[in-house]
Image (cartoon, rainbow, N blue to C red):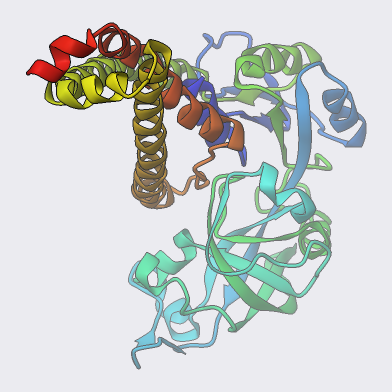
Length: 402
């Protein structure tokens, strides 16, 4: 159905069919809802990810690691229109002078980026195993007073990334350089930078090796989180319950899915009603057109019969006219539908992009196109049967005398 196709399109990339898994046990006092309330910390390791991947209804499990880093871009860095971007207010005077910000770096398996809620705004994603490429998010742009219109500005910049580590009363950083290759909007995990696991792991290991009470909120779990994608939207609740049974806190937009399904169900009913009314009107239009043609061509019909045309010849003639009329109408209607779908998809994609969601693509199979065109021709033949019968049974003498 149209509802299923829309939901399937929206679920592509994980925004609706995705389940966020935290490195924590579920809170037993939590009432079921979309948001998670993590309980006690619990290690999320490869064994746990494999166990989740083996669950019924799971399509993909993507690991996520996060760490806190200091990011120093070129200060200022130029914008395409000649302006220069500097760190906005809210930072210390020293950080404003250096352009440094304290950010969360998110690392994930970018080979499976299509399974994550990531929207590319400019440039490209980092290479899946690159330790020197990074994508910045709209959160990082906002630090410099930039918005989506300036998304391409930082692409190509080289930034310094420092992983902090406490040494008594002092903090030292392990510095590395990274090339900004893209700008994204993402909800895989809270963070201003996105990179590969190979980029994050050395920094995370360095920071976590400090004293236990000075680890900059870095958990000891091998993975900070995971993003589990269900095969079907209807399986999100089932998969989420299975993950909870394993012992991990989860978050998924179940209420949002139910709301979208109810809304699209109503839309589907309304559109089906409109389509049914359109079919009835089209059939009546074909019937009325052919009845008018019979009335206007009575003398022509009489002449045809006078020179030897049989009733079935006249019947075939009018049925042929009805079929051609329906065929042409089907082709024109299908082309109009394709154009309308493309325009609507463009408008919807603009909205989805503004909400940092994966865009959709209008899909119309050749089978649907053929059924639409052939169906229009068959409908015209059925609607034209009665006028064709009337023309075939018209007496030749009566028709010629008019």
